[in-house]
Amino acid sequence: GYYQERYRPHIHFTPEQMWMNDPNGLVYFEGEYHLFYQYHPDSKQWGPMHWGHAVSKDLIAWEHLPVALYPDDLGMIFSGSAVVDQKDTSGFFDGKPGLVAVYTHADGDLQRQSIAYSKDRGRTWVKYDENPVIQNPGIKDFRDPKVFWHEKTEKWVMVLAAGRKVQFYTSPDLKQWTYASEFGEGWGEQKGVWECPDLFPLTNEISGEKKWVLPIGIDAGAPSGGSGTQYFIGSFDGKHFVPHQPKEAVRWLDYGKDFYASQSFSDVPDRRVILAWMSNWQYANDVPTDPWRSAMTIPRELTLSMVEGQERLIQKPIAELTSLIEKRMEKEPFFLNEKQSIEIIQPASPFLWEMDVEIEKGGVFEGRLFANEEAGLRVGIDRERNVIYVQRDRAEIDFSKEYVCTCQAPLSGHHSSFHLKLVCDHSSVELFLGDGEISMTNLYLPAADHEAQLKMEAVRGTVEVKQSSVSELTSVWR
Ligand code: FRU
Picture 1 (cartoon, rainbow, N blue to C red):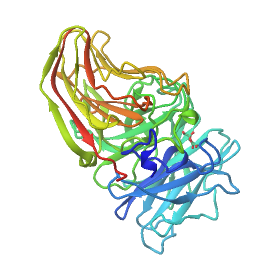
Picture 2 (cartoon, rainbow, N blue to C red):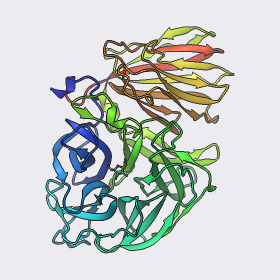
Picture 3 (tube, rainbow, N blue to C red):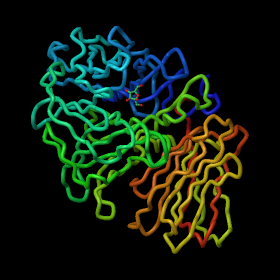
């Protein structure tokens, strides 16, 4: 079976074969989570885009379904979203609830927005016969509609990437759209074209205030190189987004190299869950996996809180993930003198595990984890520079000069100790720091015979580890 393939993730979503990029149309409907994705069914390279499709009851195990949307006379099917039309505002569903997909039709350089609907829980789709529903206003990069129902104004709202900003449209029925406003000119990170926006409310856990969060991908210029995802926090009245931050401030949703085109699930009643495409446009087309290319991140629950007086997104792997833990092994607390190192418990499978480590804050030190001597990945905390970093050494196959890199995030000083959680799954490592105020997502392509050495090393100064544990995880393919 395909679950034996080299580098094949066992707890992450991948297409059975061929090319995948962005998650699309994430929606919960009648007991199922739907995951559509940018898909090229004929090749392992990006090409004429389709929407691939899968469903899950628990966001962990996915069932592959046939391709949902094929390219047509209006062009390729680029990224977009899906919603439950609860009140049948569209009139597609004979008064009952149904699914509507909103996506970009891309014909050469011409990008327009279109819709399609499904009357059978997403199994088959009909494209609206009056597509496109939004014509191109003369903007080259005009794509990736994310739609939601805005309670207060009782209208559908669309947020759309438009060059290096976003635009908002509103609609009573998902068919007729009216331009409302735009946001972003000169705001945040402007080094790349903006793509795949999202917009959703979250209540700040500390202040109890309701805020609106606007994540947005940039195709180049992210802190660790290439594509990455920033976000804004502000207010939204159904037409206008007002950011609550200085114009030049930039907040990153993830500090790793491989977290892009994130999207949140629509119509999940009690929480906000996102996932992202786990690759980077710098090398996505060359990652040495076969017969598929690309995976999604672990789904993550988002909350809003205060970190050192600043409002910030908090990101945690969804609670369902703990159901995959087979065995949790704890190590006694330990102390390392400078240059000393120690082995942490080795999991049975070197490439499928979760690790939790709690390091005493202490004075100036640099502690390193998982320092494989060869083709390795080093995760470190450097108290002198006050950063947490992930350093990727060479991959087994030298497929891109951008693979070898170090990404880093600023350490926040508000904790008395540093809690790190790492989730490793065959070709990726996702890192969460503290309560989840920092995440770093990276592909990791070590040699096949390479045993994971879960080591802790005091590179400089002394390191005190209060707690460490390794959990063996079970594959969802079994
Ligand atoms: C982001 C993106 C989107 C576009 C899609 C095309 O990765 O460039 O802006 O809709 O991929 O596949």
